[in-house]
Image 1 (cartoon, helix red, strand yellow):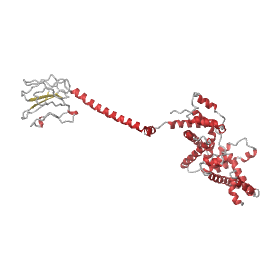
Image 2 (cartoon, chains in turn cyan, red):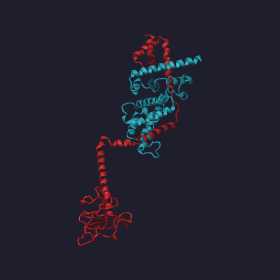
Image 3 (cartoon, rainbow over the protein chains, first blue to last red):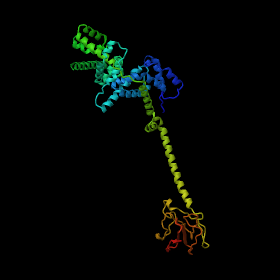
Image 4 (cartoon, chains in turn brown, green):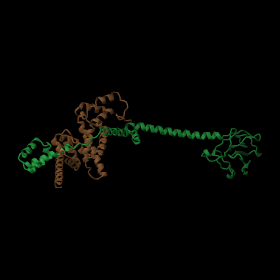
Length: 223
Length: 248
């Protein structure tokens, strides 16, 4: 079976590509446009590669960002993103249209990152720290002055190191809850766990983050 | 509630993860406790830091490369391996088809084997069969007899099989057991002279002394070597006659 990337195709495939162009919505627009997303998924399940390409385009930022937060470096995040989309392509037929597509996507991402971390730990038995410098580059310019003060270089690096020390389940829970903004119940669904367990993990993670930051700031103050 | 009891709830309170009843309890406690209020502020601050932990800026080329890699992997993984191709034949819906095909192949192979075996025997026998096998030359009792020539290599029967063995004939008088020799000794044949265009078996222009005995048997065999011809005499009387080979 010859599979062609829609980008690599020289000529548009009639209605299929017309649909792809028509569906080319702004980034993350599919999250709000559920009917368009459902249509793309339906076409992708039917074998429409252009539709799957559009799904990738509209979810690649989320997947890469989540992978980066879970794995801590860009190279692994890219590998994880590839694996995530490969699994999405394989198992898209199993996706239940009644559930949130992005929750399903995050579940795959979390599982892929977990597998990748296991593999990395076999190769190098330590937790991979987040690339601090990379995280510092992305301070949103739209935030007000008080937030920019808080997101100072040192403290941002500190939180990056702190999150890298968390156990995987706690890291996944707190990233999904506090960064991605899912509800506790949604996080429990993504992690295939109970809401009580997720609350416990979130509570533990927040306490560890605060303690890590306080101890680091204390050490810094002494020096 | 005391601070120790409230402290366990502060982390969840900072993220609005408590139910209404517990959230109200914590809020009431925070109005009178500055330490717990400061702790909640720390948790919320850390939470805000976490939200600001955004990944590095990635160009569109990176995303394109990721997507192209995905398509390449999809293409690579969609190619069935040899094992997968063979495994399809053993699916339940294809078992009978596979079995029938295997049986057909076996029957075909067996048939081809039989045909090949038969065709490999006949051409050899035809190639070495003399055009004129027997020419009787002596006396009024001479008669034409077709002498069967059996190539020894292609039969499992012993030499002179099917021919009744004359009683009392010693074994050392029989023709030598050679691969390119032939046997011709039907019962009742007096004199036999073989002629053939074959380079192996006797030539028609041969001229040999023939014993006058009516009961003698003569057979000429031309070997592969044109300079060697085997002439075999035999008598039916119980008295042994010395056989010999004569080179020409």
